[in-house]
Amino acid sequence: MSYKLHYVKYNVETASRVLLIDSDIIFCQILLIAIL
Image (cartoon, rainbow, N blue to C red; front, side, top):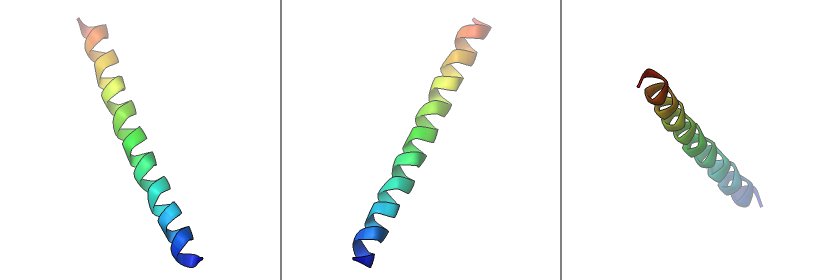
């Protein structure tokens, strides 16, 4: 049971990292569009 909880926690952390990276990329694209 504790192993499953640890696995879920790891997946949530990984997903949030991916979302943060994606939002950073989108933010950079918005900045580039605004500059151009």
